[in-house]
Image (cartoon, rainbow, N blue to C red; front, side, top):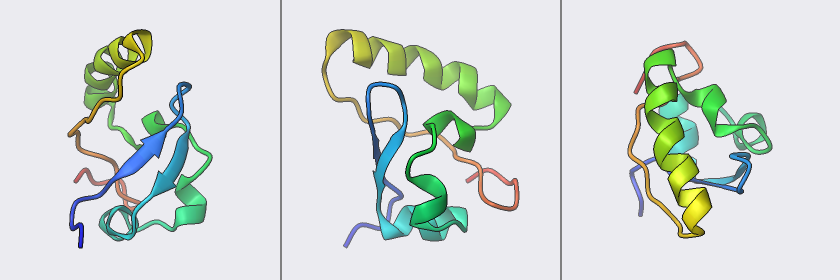
Length: 78
């Protein structure tokens, strides 16, 4: 079983699917995550850092794996 939080997004950065581990780590439900842009889960410092690799992946058309801290329901980063 996967313990790491995982999600997939479309070319616009909208979350399409999440795994149970991500929901547990963030203290959110699938319903509160799916359909929302990934950047809503990022802290301000990480937003700028994540934008560039995301744009490069979209331009190349290749899938990309990112490891970045995401914001939990309580506002803390994890």
